[in-house]
Image (cartoon, rainbow, N blue to C red; front, side, top):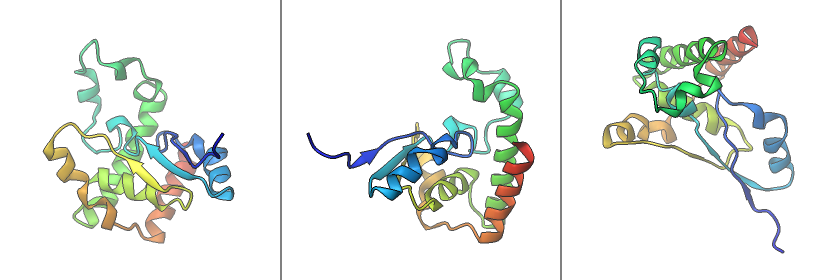
Amino acid sequence: IAPITSAQPPYSLVRPEAEADVLPYALAHNIGTLVYSPMGSGLLTGAMTRERLADLAEDDWRIRNPHFQEPLVTRNLAFADKLKEIATRHGRTAGEAAIAWTLHNPAVTAAIVGVRNAEQVAGVAGALSFRLSEDEFAEIAALRNALA
């Protein structure tokens, strides 16, 4: 049996649970992490609104996902608003800011980003070169603490 060389947990501002166990363990044991859903299944793109949520098709899986329902959806949309605010200062998208936040964690090797079309690719392509400042990380951390 080969040793574990990578892990693939979900990880984003919306789903930070991996910070409690998987990511620290992986970092301590030199295990790569390819996190998925850094944009929170679309919640952190800046395009998701309460109106858009209300218009989701009945068969859309997100309707039944707790992150798209109260009380979590209010928190998650607040994260999206903060990311959009920060991204706008740099001429970037909220999705790029969400990915940049995710990639900043030293335990994260790579982020798997799901997109549906070329426009969405263009909306996040700059994430690799986008770096949030320490002040911006502090803004996000303050919001996380306030909403915890």
